[in-house]
Image (cartoon, rainbow, N blue to C red; front, side):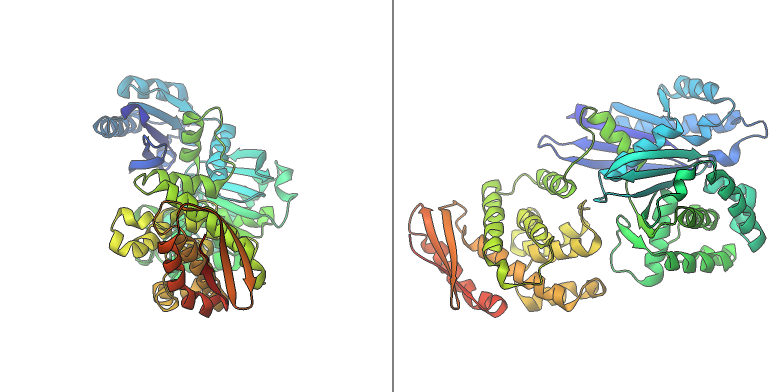
Length: 507
């Protein structure tokens, strides 16, 4: 399986990162290792624009360290890329030659356009969003892209980032009013060279990269957000302004203690957030949306799947990948439950007018994953299912939807569900609890119809009469004694939620 492991090294202007991906024998992709080293290459550029020899040799040492990690992980396919700090250095080609000579790695130098394209691909394959601006603030450059209908239309790379703007305007990370105005003036002047940036108002500003992730962590810590997921996290303009001003007023020593802020970003975070705010106003965007995927993910998809790097159905791909990571689950039973749950939903949904259009999608994902917790412990598999879905990183869902899917998949009783969801009540409404109960008990009915996991009830029809939901076999193998008893034991709880009791007839 060593040929199925692939290392990506991203030589950025602020940090150098390694990610090792593995493709399992069942077709799942997963990250099995990662590492990060702070480099601050943009800060080390000499007055003549070159990267000094010591910085180059330090970089060689980091690459050799990463190569050793890859070797220990039996990873022999390594794709290294470099961005703005090396791209803009006057001794760029000399740097690349010395990196290859010292580490044995051939480093691909990305143009600003290529950097934006890889970042867009990583975002596109992880966020179900059609239109917006994509912003990637690095240490020495910032990529701004416009996408419509999930297609990249425009992109540009500007020579400013959180590291070089800190050096220029924010000594030791402090940014007073005069410095902030000077930074804004310089950035706005550069943005004027790309008039399309101001021609598409009220789109979301999708932010990727270290500054964006730090932004989300800080905002979540400040507001006591119940999920520790930065991907697909929205921040409105007012919330961003409030956090920026709060951090800007803090001396560096106090800022170090701010919840959610890592020590290597203490001096960079205020200039980085200033850049995000400037870009939000310049694009006239509706607000921020943080994306946890970006350049490295794009490099992975393009390198491993060059013929078809773009994913079409993000949620289905994510669910399939998670199932492939746990191949011991009974696939025939899961497929039956999934199909039956959707069939039951289509037959009964008219009884509840409050279902949103994506409710069927949530039920489908929950039905596909309801047994995943059994790979840890069957006796408490519902609890494990909830935890695994909450932390699996299901792409194509926002945070509210992730909670909904996890709760539906692990549903047993209304009281248990309320206790389980208590930490996340800020993300839910009373109607959400009602919907979770309705879809959760519907999933339990689909599970009951294949209690023996033999798919004996091959086809059935559903009709409602008075207070009974009649399930009549159209094609069955045997008398379905176990399944009929299971449905009967579920009938009372089902009635309390749906005001109709299911009855499985004999063949």
